[in-house]
Image (tube, rainbow, N blue to C red; front, side, top):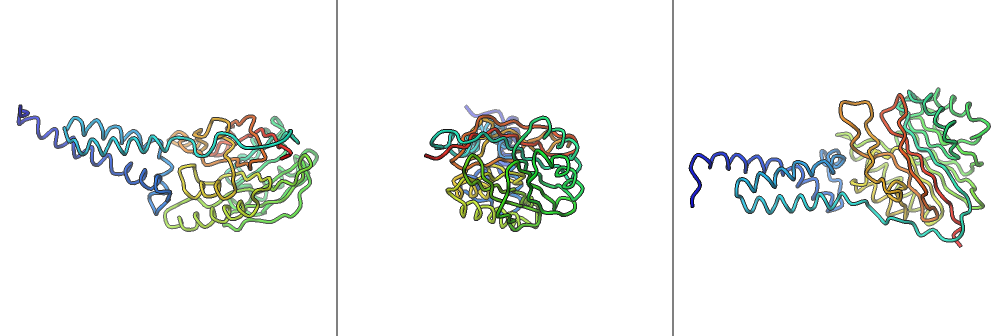
Length: 324
């Protein structure tokens, strides 16, 4: 039986609305499945990928209401693809071998131009990490944290600069072979001895993928990828504000090149958002990470709110194995 004429305009409107709702999830999910970050606005929209299941699901309902079989099948395929991308990236365990050589607590925090310095100091005193990676730590922040922990974390590698350009890496263990990965913002690194093993510790803070400088974001994540590949398969702890989530091909390339694992993924919290805090929107994307090589097992990961910054800090409890 033909539908009444007065219903047809409503179904046509539903079909158009479903098609429009489907456009962004289709393009972004396709780029994710093809392992590319493409160009603006795809890198920015990839940060919202889990939330694109909402318009994709609405598109399925509208296409079904409109009785557009082809559109409904397409919408269902896009929804299925988007849901598939929500799976955590990478294996759920490392292949760490041998007995535990040392237990390590790592803290990674972006203190937003140094504004969360006091909160960071209080957190370090409470949690007592052995390694601390601090992004957007300006000169005053650097002096404050190194001075406050001259006894507990006496060793540091830093890039001393103003605003978001400064970074500092604090360690309870002596540091050597200090070097920085090239980037607009400071990314210091060094080698330390933990439990009788030489471990490379590297801070990550590439530029964000803002329109007009996505190419620089890719280049700086590429530099981190090259550093990770150069260090593999030796023990490596690469942590900080990556300005990228597991949905960005540039971050997945870092993981793959260095044979690294996201500690949050291993702890079962791969999708816990770390940014932005204190904005009209609730935190919706995880861009702060602690990445570990296969020499480590993860005991626990927690996400901490620090007053004064728009990032959650990542606190990871790790076991470093002997490898034999």
